[in-house]
Image (cartoon, rainbow, N blue to C red; front, side, top):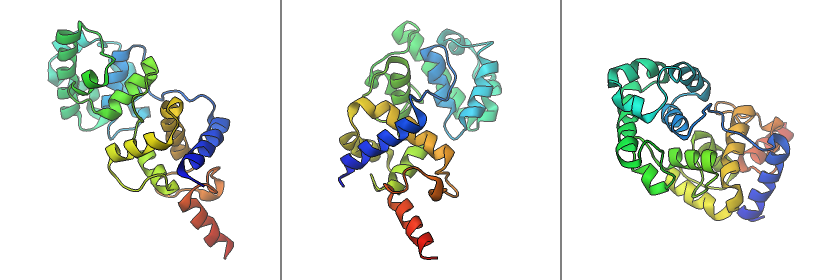
Length: 218
């Protein structure tokens, strides 16, 4: 079975299980999502949603963040971790959006990744969730881990992983494919102890097949 054939089977199984997946981060505007994704680095989506729910009651526009002292932004987001760097990036990105784009989050990949604190992962999430634009595949820790376990890729570099996945995942599934693996990673393929016996992908997964073979010998 080729990697493309395996990927199509994975998409079908995950679609049957999860249907049409939605972003786990809560937002009402492109800018709110941009900030939320910046905050999600090394932080759970649940924690980010708790923080943004309260913070967005007071400040939720690039103009407001651009005018806010960075120390105040830090106070709002402290519990998300790495808050000093995140606050600095949020303020800088807000200022850029106000000055260069009249307060509107740009849609272009190059324009987005030029903003402070915005890499390909963040840009892919925003473009995909807001405008359903797929110029790449979001590679977070779940996607990196599962694609390696399954055997679709081999390595830790998100840029290389994204490029390799783009060659085997149909483009019309680039956005949902990441969602599926993230949801599966949270459900059964958990990082510390994957529950391979419960996983719907175990027959398609290199790691899962190995685990199942070992269990059958006992």
